[in-house]
Image 1 (cartoon, one colour):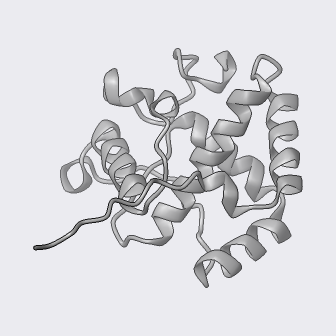
Image 2: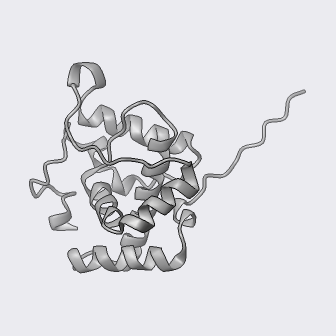
Length: 153
């Protein structure tokens, strides 16, 4: 008889200190005044889960536009971001913007689906509110004032 024990998913917000989390939340709320503190907290978690999943796979992953904005907020704290990457993953996780070949990697929607799967596979909670493209058109990171654009957050 084999016993399978399911692990509960980890909230990626636990990967950084409460102080750094508060700083990132404050930065995002300053840039996007309509963003609630609760949603900003959750966004930090999804960004951290994305970065962690990216560190665990050789496959290209892609953040949603809103998750990318949270990542940019963290990247601006270069020392804290570098220390986080080295302490947590043993390597620096680079931000490499650009468009991947659609034929080889799928479009934006396929990349986001792979990203969400990778976050779950890495053991982190997925908050689908931060990945709305999975239910809508095949989007890219254009910030064209769509419903999920940070402009409307």
